[in-house]
Image (cartoon, rainbow, N blue to C red; front, side, top):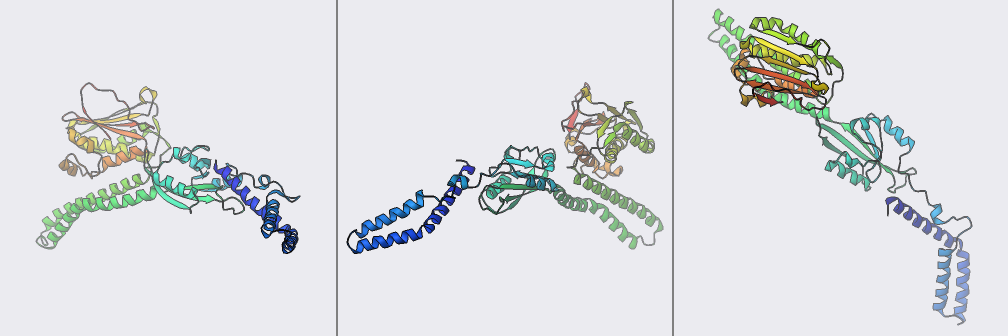
Length: 448
């Protein structure tokens, strides 16, 4: 028996009880007269007391079960019609007016309505069970308790996908009109996105941990030079001038480190938000190459470009993509300067599928294979001395990785010692790596 049939049957039984009591009350004068007559017959020994009692009980039962008033309809017809399985227009309008994703469910967990925000966030359609899309045990348990008549509940859960998203789900029963206490109403489900809050908490913790670790060395250096200048070198003008230069370099290093940490924090904060503005990659790369020409000239490096005449447009954030290619090309100039040239090539989507592919290649010393998988970790340096000599913070490739993740792109790193390195950015909205042609020799490869 379905929930609706049970509800109707319960209502019919309650209506029958109320009708029987009403008929007995209306027939009270008749019962009193009959009881008096039977008592008289018992007193004159015409009828036994047991027989009189049975006759009175049978008469009362007959009135209660079989007789109806002229205005009284059959119990089944007088009960309320079964509740609709679809919400009314007022409930739908309420859901549409909410600023958050909202879903209206029946007591079995079937979606009966979803506002536009819910449909955009989750592929939910009316008529589908909610568990087809959301199967978190805590989430399902909260719904079951509310659907069984429990109080409103809220539960936090993690939705895994291309990026992790945290939600707060709030369940509450919508009681039928008239304040009825049966279980024929709907369940309202409202989602609140907690992703940004969770990310900001993690970023704050990571920032404090990373900053305290990386700033300790330059701060110790500054403190040591200040003590020296206040003590033994107080009157040594030459030493004081040299120490001030070193202190300036350390302060500049701390400034760069803090700038990179803040930049990484801002990018992580927006990791779940996909940029959609059209950006021409050829224009971005030309602008970056022009800006880095003075640096390349000072390092004795030539930047060679091979770009198509037609624009290569991707959905993205122009400033962030400038930062990606600036980091990659600048790294090629600094760490691959022994090869004296850096090649930057951009090609349309291979086979007409996916997105454009951009490769930055240097011809320097290359990177040992054991370092490739960890190059995009924070503060990881394949060559610590070279990184410090080039005033690197160890955050450049970590920033590149996070920006590309947000842009639905992947970073492919290839390198062989003595032959240089290539960093390839493959744009693909499906977050699948592009298939790049082999170049003859086997090379160490790392997908980030």
